[in-house]
Image (tube, rainbow, N blue to C red; front, side, top):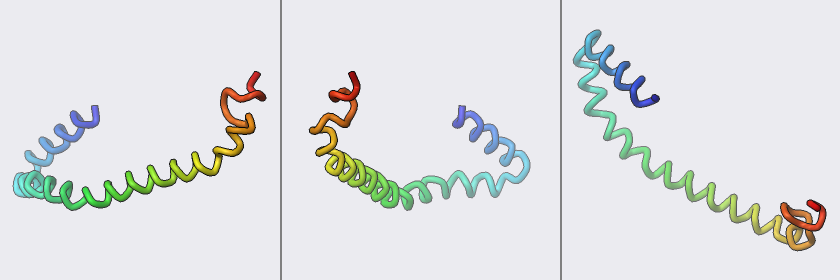
Length: 73
């Protein structure tokens, strides 16, 4: 649904101001390529924080405080 809205907005921009629409069409892949390193850093930090959370919560899970432990019954 989001893609359909983007295409419809681009068509509206093409009718209203075609040079700006063509410029957006050319610059969009360049902006996507420039944002890739930031997305990879975000994924890496998300994985790192998930690992640290799992590591810090491990003693509680071993002692039965986590999901499916002795206190869940």
